[in-house]
Every structure is written in structure tokens, then in C-alpha cells.
Image (cartoon, rainbow, N blue to C red; front, top):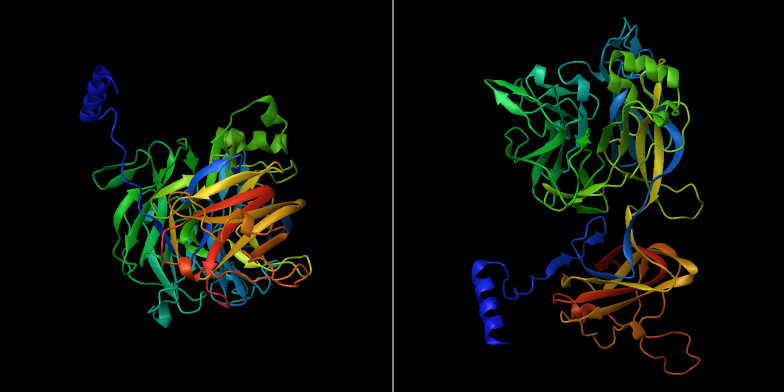
Length: 521
């Protein structure tokens, strides 16, 4: 380097414009966790390959909210997989716009259940009165009824009387209150005062035990410019999400607004954040994006234009706002990678769709059996359908393959993913993948500097093709004779607990997740 250039380089280093090469990042210890591609944390490079967001497939209507205590305002659904029982919670209320005014009925919180996650029934619980009768499925009618959100507490030392918990409440009630239940049906306040007091709370506010972090997390509605004047919290700006943590579910601290990677500021109505059941170190959220589009030819071309105009007469947004489901992921609970493209679009135009309140995804994705005989289980998600008019609405089921939110995909000409340096535990590697009949995957293990490890190169890995949520990768030694029926599979045990990179080579294939484990786990 010539003297002037050298002098310029040194000056730039001193002023911070350019910095000398940084030390390599520490390897990421993934242990034997299942890793997905919902975020880019583990990806070092993609060549002729990309991450692809996948969209849920519409299935049957899981429940029809048509009871006298339900109606077009049923919302804020939560679903819990409890052993072989699927528990569904939701707010019941009537909703209508009449003569230019919004009319809301009495709010109650309801319970339904299913043995297959496909069709839900409403048991007669006899707990709370509605119009002179207790023959209903109502579980709560007190403070917090607007947005009650139960969860199953998985904390190891959780006492039986509080096996189920919930946060619920609105700002005019004082904030969020803490609830408990031994059976998910009979509920009581843990203490009479609210446990979180600063926020807007006019949404579905959630809490859960985060086993990976060893603490409770809460996520609740705030606004981007919310301010406290005296003792009154006033929302301003965009609908947003705030989080807090607690060791005991009553004392909450570490409050912070969520941040995002390369996402615009936009209204997020709900958040639906929780651990993904196959990889609980990953927090997945399914927030509802709220968009006010105003009047246009396209708006008038959407379903039920006359009713849309009727709603808009009470407030423009009632007729011209639209909602849809998004996907986001986090490893620390505060910073999320949010997919800006819709995860659950409003879909084909038909009655009771393309509405404000449509495609609010229920809290929690759950495993269900596939409708295809012999196929692997799948993920079920549930989203609202119909609102504002008539005496009912519903919750539709949607499905994805296991881990099927995002894949790394490449065309038949081929593409590659190389991971950042990783440390794993185990002696096998399995993939969740799908290929075409002509396509395939191969896997290579490398040293941190990118050198292929002998015995684990692409050439040692026979092409992998098919469609499986759990296919073990084979690196095979050469057969002893040309007609040998089997090959010797190399164990990964000698590479465990030391830094490596993984090179995935794909041809007309999708890779959804991978996991190191011990054989016969």
C-alpha cells in the first residue's frame, strides 16, 4: 500500500470510518435443538437459494359462534393442547352497526373443546348465568372479560391450583389482572389489584412460562407514542406490542417495546406470541396487521359493499379497514424478525371475508393429525371469519406441515446454504425437507474455515429425496463389494462439541428444519 493510501487507511481506522477485521464470531451452541429458518440467525450465506415464506391452507370451519350469548363479535381466541384434549377459549358478544352507531352486546368468556382439533363442541358448564339460564359454556364474566387469555403453565414447580393462568383487563379497569384455575374452567383472581398498569390493553394480552429463559413473559397492547399524563395513560401513534417478564407472575419488570429487523412501522392489532412446540427456544408470533385503506374502486369491489357502507357510516374504519395475519420470530423475546409479506392473507373474496377483524389468528399453533392416511402430523392454526353483522361468526382451521412456516429453497439448477459456525450434541443429523422426484439434497460438514471434513463431504452424502419431517442424513463409506446391499454409515459423535459449519446443497427442494440428536433418542 502506497504511503498516502496507508496514511488514509490508518486515519479512517482512528476516526471509526473503517475498522480492522473483527475477531470471528463465537460459534452458536445449538445442542440438540431443532432449528428452523423463521429467522436468519444461523445462516451465513445463501447462493442461488432463498428463504421462502409459506402460507397456511384453509380447511373446515372449526366452530360456529351461534349461541345466544355469542354473536358477530366473538374474538380473541386461545387454543391449548392439553394431553389429548384441545381447549378453546374465546370472547362471546354480539356486534352490529345500526343507524350509524356501533352496538355491542354483553361480553362473556367461553370455552369449547375437541379431541382431534378439527371440530369443537360447547359443553354445558352451569357456571354463569346468561338471560336467566346457566345452560351454557361461559367460564368468566367479571373483570377482564373483554380479553381473557388462558395458558397452561408448564413451570415445573407450578402448584395444582394454578395449573392454568391468564392475564386480562383493560385500561379503564385499571390494567391487567392475574387469574388462576386448577382445571382451565373454574377461574379466580390471584389478587384483587392489577399486576400491570401502564399500557392500552385493548387487545388480546398474553403471558406464558418461557422454559428456555426460565421466567414468565407477557405481551400486551401499547402505542408507539403512548404517554402518561398524571395517572392516566393515553395512547397515541401506532398500535404496538410491549413485553415484560416476571419470576412469580405477579411482579413484572424489564418492560420494553418490541423491535424488528427491517420492518416498517405499522399497526399490529394482536401479537399471539409463544414458544413453538417443536422448538421452544424460538418464540413465534402471529400478529394481526391492521390497514386502513379508505374508499376506492377496489374497496367497493370487496364482498358485501352495502354492509361495508353501513359500517362506514358509523366510522370510516369499520367499513374500510382490513386485517390479515403476519409471522415473526425471536430468540430473546424483545427483538423479532418480522416477515413483511402476509402470512395469512384474506384469501379468495367470499361473504364474511376481507373485513376488519378477519384473519385474527388464534393464540398458539398446535399439532393435529393429517387428513391424509399415513402422512405425518401437521400444524393447525385457527383464524376468525365473519364479523359485524348477523348473530354469528366462526373460526376456520388452517394447516401447515410441521415446521413449515419458512423453508430454504433452490431450483433444479441447484443452490446452497452455509451456516454460521455451530456446536452440536449428538451423533445423527435429521432433516425436515421436501423435494421433487427429480430434485434432492446433499449435506456437507465443514471446519470453521470452510474446509470439507473428510468422510462428511458432499461426495460422501448420497442424494436425499422424498418428503419427510424426520429423515436421517447418511454419509456412507464405500461398499466392500459392488453388489453389497448396505453401506457403513458414519457417526457424527466424533464431531460433537466442536465448531463446524453445515453446507446444504439443494436441487428443486425445500429445507424446513434440521436437528442433531442421539440415535434411538
